[in-house]
Image (cartoon, rainbow, N blue to C red):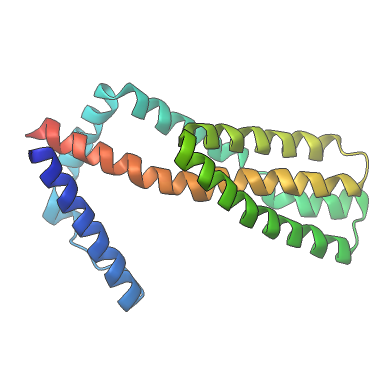
Length: 182
């Protein structure tokens, strides 16, 4: 009973913050000190990380997956300096990246809703690894079309879709924290 009331309250607060953000252009919320002290926050977080192994593994994997995204902004510079890619080609691969992200967002969102977001995160890690290895081994600039397709899929899976998943996980973690603190 208490757990469902907390979830209902969390959804209400989240909805109110989103509406306020839309009207005022920034989030107006209650300061953290009014909700709990920093010490209480860290104590609750340590309880969550100790008690929920899956959440602990998720946080670790999420932090490591961000390392896979680090080289992506430098692919264009590498292609221009290493292979002499022309401006028109740079514009084309940038457009390809945008189209790939749009399509991958729709497809991976659907896959995540149907099969779970673990598969989406794994797909993102594989796509980023594929694009990094392909960029490293590319014999000429034309291979960067495939590099940017892999990069687009990886960016969507590890940033956009994972961020939505993070909201769901953090809501569950906060609910668990409140449950253990009662």
